[in-house]
Image (tube, rainbow, N blue to C red):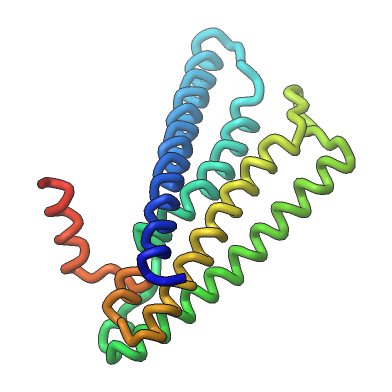
Length: 194
């Protein structure tokens, strides 16, 4: 994948992940509203919606997986960079590639597990052991969808980073996979205000 094509694919993934993260944020706000209403109803009227805790758990899991791709594209995943910043550019580039590969391996494990859970729920016709009796395939499928988007973004970022490394373009590699520098964060903030 040449850098122009990789950039175009990344822009599409940025739009998709931005929509996903907005939906995830909406789910979290909805959860806050639901749980708050549940607490008030229990306190004032001694009644309950029933299932607020169950639905909030599903929303949290789904929202988390849907936000991973956006966090990766925004370079917002937490990395310990105390020593990283003192290394030469080539060593940092190698560490960036190792970080992407490690994150990819972990994401594959998450997606495989989520896929197995979904497959088992579909085979068994599993429902939650709660008054709502939620068919478990619904939240599990949405959870898996977030991991799949994350894996696609990881694969594209890894290929783009490997291409930049092969060309010796360490600046591009850093802009794709490196940790944010203070300069990067200042530039982002100035761009937002412009």
